[in-house]
Image 1 (cartoon, rainbow, N blue to C red):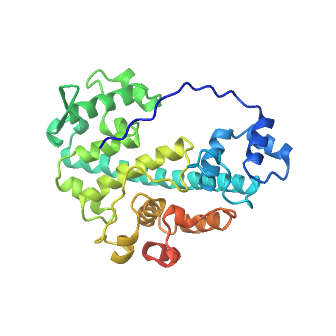
Image 2: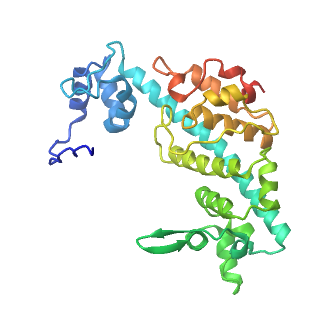
Image 3: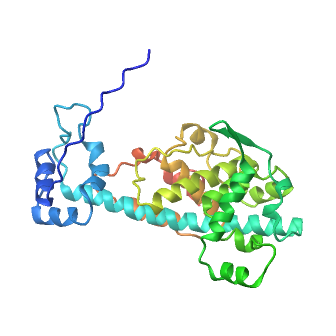
Length: 324
């Protein structure tokens, strides 16, 4: 039986002054030790942005409760500590994914350019799967969509090497792979790798990251590009259920996680993603400080931080990839 949709009503809430916002939080049970300081924070970090960090500690189901805080010992500072932890965590993850993205990008460009001997191999449709889907009654071919997006991203690039190519060379109109694929987004690069035929080149790229299944690297690129976008757009990540379920390999060439831990790990939680980030970093950047920096962040995360909300098991520091 289909549930009846809730009837829509006009939105008639009025904007609140900073002072009123502080008072509202206090009325709902948040301990405000310094109203001026709280007001200063709210004038620089919006009430609605902070709502993502107060939400888990409020009664959001009972309309009569009006979002009252379930715990009465939570201070405004605790919320700010959690917000700051999340901000620093985003920065740590963003920097790590940047290294991973650059490495994957470099290997794709180098391996396919060398093996094909074609400077513009990404325009060779025979290298890609012949897949399509239907949109509004029209068949859309995946390669055509990818090609259009690559062209669009090249055209909007302000990189000097792209400008130089366009000013000097008449044909081909598009730059070679080692220029063109440097300016496309990680998401587009992820789609490019996913659409490539399953050949030895594609296997070689996955194998250089100690992965014996192409599907794993395809999934990791897709998942990490989504996580990167969350970080880039300042979205909350500490207790987020991520859209893409990241695959956890049981036959990786290097130390990852044991099968029992993999079976218990939630694939849409941050811990699963961080295991994959740490795994690749250890390959491309030996002796990296990712683990050390993550532990320092967690130690300074504040009273409200719960590792369980991020999918961390109790003994995570001693598991597989984290032992190194």
